[in-house]
Figure 1 (cartoon, rainbow, N blue to C red):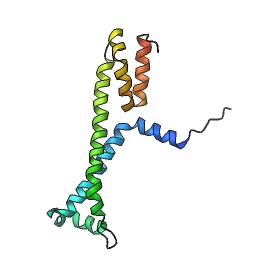
Figure 2: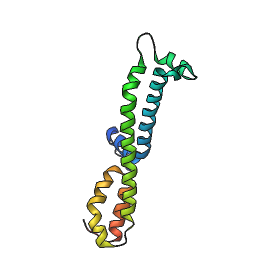
Figure 3: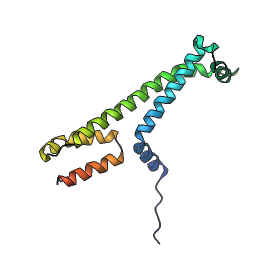
Figure 4: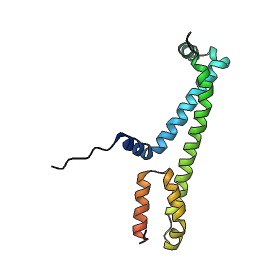
Length: 140
């Protein structure tokens, strides 16, 4: 029986982040939006309407007002999430466009751009790129 080598946690974590890049980006954007909504619900007249009184009672404790943290972190996390989502989907669209080529010469011209785009895409896309290179008989 062959013993399987255990992959370090850090490498598994990075691989998971790369594999689920779109979902991670959307999650970061959603968390930022939630934090921003909680901050708006505390500092605007929305504080009087449900569900904000209950939420504000939990986030504005006598020891700490977490809503002040939400005001700062919410917009920052939204901006980071918007960048991550935008970068992924722009790279995805451009990659799909470049992979449609049937011409070996055009594919060779686009290799540097495709390899740059692969940094923002998933391992499945890297595999598709390698298959396309083999299909067009492009050497390293």
